[in-house]
Length: 129
Image 1: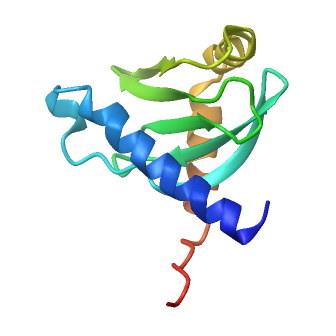
Image 2: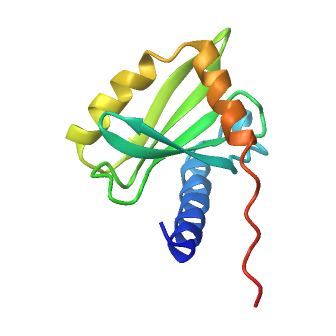
């Protein structure tokens, strides 16, 4: 992916995250920032971009460019001692269903590993003007 495409994707992901969280008025989302990453993951045979959140428990996975699930996101949300998987979008159900199945099988240790992988990504600087 070119630097320009990466920048456009990061902007789109940020906007989509903001819009997605705006739909929730629950206090658990106040101050939520999910910008650590991205880490590329193959789920259901397609590429997804994972970003972890500042609560150190949640992860958002966006359908990457070229993924027929786009526009769509999944999120691991902390739920008691574990996590639940939620998702929303209008992409191809044939692409989202197998990814959802894989995500439901993630263990708590796999989720924590994914969070650590996203935190290891150095933030990209904005291009100079």
